[in-house]
Image (cartoon, rainbow, N blue to C red; front, side, top):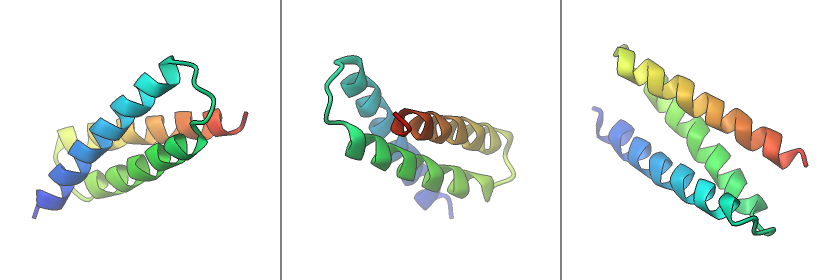
Length: 76
């Protein structure tokens, strides 16, 4: 039941990490990467919200915050 959740969490963590590393380089062509980061964070949050465990709810909150940060970045 949680295989999909764990897989999505792992992919999300890798994408967020890679996005943060690329953004730290001040490289300019990152819009599509940030869009994908936003997309996977939303998917992960939705997956985690489906579970009642406290750590799942905390994960969902963190993913929503990351998605919001991506939205803010994409405004500029």
